[in-house]
Amino acid sequence: MELLFEGIAAALTFENLIYAFVGCLIGTLVGVLPGIGATSSVAILFPFTTYLPPTGMIITLAAIYYGAMYGGSTTAILVNVPGEISAVVTALDGHKMTKKGRPGPALAIAAIVSFMAGIVGATLIAILGPPMARLALVFGPAEYLGLGLFSLTAIAALSGPSLIRGAIVAIVGMVLVSVGYDDSANFGRLTFGSETLLQGFSIVPVMIGLFGVGEVLRLYEEHAGTPEAPKKIGKLMPNREELRDGLAAGGRATVLAFPLGLLPGMLPSVTSFLSYSIEKQRSKTPEKFGEGAIEGVASAEAANNAAAMSNLLPLMALGIPTGPTMALILAALTVYGLIPGPMLFTVHADFTWTVIGSFFIANVILVVLNLPLVGLWARITTIPQGILSPVILTICLVGSFSIRSSLFDVWVTVIFGLLGWALSRANWPLAPLVLAYVLGPLIERSARQVIELSPLLLFERPIFWGFLVMAGISIWFTRRMWKTAKGKIEQE
Amino acid sequence: MRTKPIEIGVLMTLSVVVIADGIALASTWKERMRALESGGFEILLGVLLAVFTYVYWRREPGEDWDNSHGAIYVAAAFGILCGYVLLMPHLGYLLSTLLAVTAYMRGLANYRWVSSIAFATVFAVGSAWFWAKLIIVLPQGILPWPEL
Image 1 (spheres, rainbow over the protein chains, first blue to last red):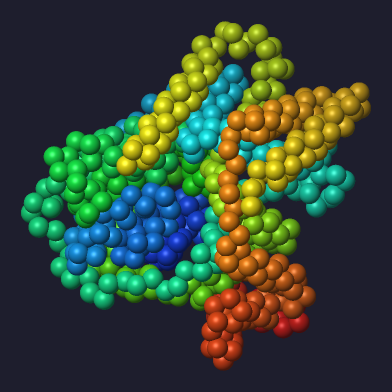
Image 2: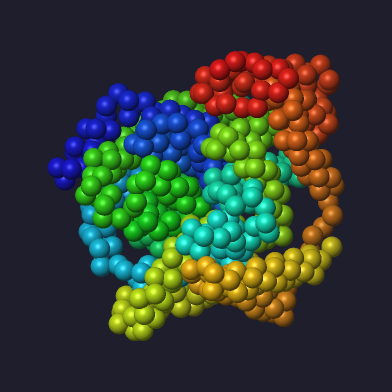
């Protein structure tokens, strides 16, 4: 606890407050742009944070992430243009409330429960982080191999109704990450004699392409006009009954979503859907859901934020990203040679506790910043796509160029942009590709180490087998989940 | 349009390329340390890709890709983007951005020429100044402004 308070105190220094404030502001600003989700926002803005010191970079990135998530829900509620899947659930009831002339209470409850889930999540990270990181001490190559395989399987299974598609995309991701110079063999792989390809495809231009350029191409395809935002937000605070129902639903969603968010592939979007559907099932008036129920907005938003927080725990403690945004934050850590795991909580304790402290501060800043500025965000949502899209494309190109001052990276962004658009157009999931980018090298390295030591070693490592069993369970569970969801949709 | 045959074709070609590259690397095991492991991993990936692609071909339904009007916009947007990147090292950030933003606004969003050029100029100059303040060195081309 002492370390946490020291972390909060360090996060309250002027410099760190500015990072958190600017991150929240820019994140919300980009997040409210129609069609741009939290992952896209982090991917687009990531390169510009590399100019900051390590603590500042992670504080800013995390603040951009929360800010963009909040911004995404604002767009979903006001103009019914969810930036990503998690905001679709918020839009279901949130936009109905806007149509009924009550956008204020929808926005306010979204902010309040997001804050609540964020604070609970940050507290649990502080409590669970160190013991979880100590767990990593018993991990050798066999355990990391098992963990990598489990994470990749779970993500492939959870990312869409087709496990085969998820698996294929994950393997393609592992193939793409193996392009370039292989240090251990002292040889280029899949370079076909090209010296340029020896540098490989760096994760940042790939992410900017898939989630930034790809998203803009999708917007051009939809040829969306200017969304219509309500002229007046009106009264902001919900009435006593709405506040009570919203807080109760938000609390239940937080309790459900935080542990789920620890599992690989349990992206905030999945937990939002789950919480919403459970809240609807337990409601005495399920017919209100989809027609402007404040519990619908609260459950989706709280689950979204709680899962976003818990996603950070396996990343910081074990170095395992559970989703595309976490893969970027991992890339940010490695920029400064910070290896997630026990070292982060011992050798780099100052850094880690300051970052955890900043999670609390960023959540407070978001509420303080966003509720009074809601009118401004509403106006920003109406910026025409025709102006917005070229601006975003330029930022994407400059961002990918700025990492290594390389035009090759810019071309990687452009090509992956087209790939991202084509994959989502044909209903192929993107998350396994990005996660394979991070987990592929971990799996390969661990597998090689196991082979070098002795493959028989695997039989002596129960944790490895435990992870394989969990991989099997995750496939079985997700197949059932998708089947039930499909049955329900057909029924309805 | 059914996309499945194209998807199968692309994935199978990729798996063949990966396996071939893996075999080429693994076959140098006498000269290179760990070439066998490195190439072997590639072969494993290629084989897994081929197997999963086969399962996908046999068991999964493909998607229908409707040739909507929007595809033309995507092609045009992608074409302008490629032109932008091609021109940037020669013309520099300032001029290539001005041209690209004008093309996007005029060509894809039907803004008037005057509005498109005016916004593109303000954006190109403003952003070039902003990147320079962040010490991001971009291609300078024929109009090196602002100088760092």
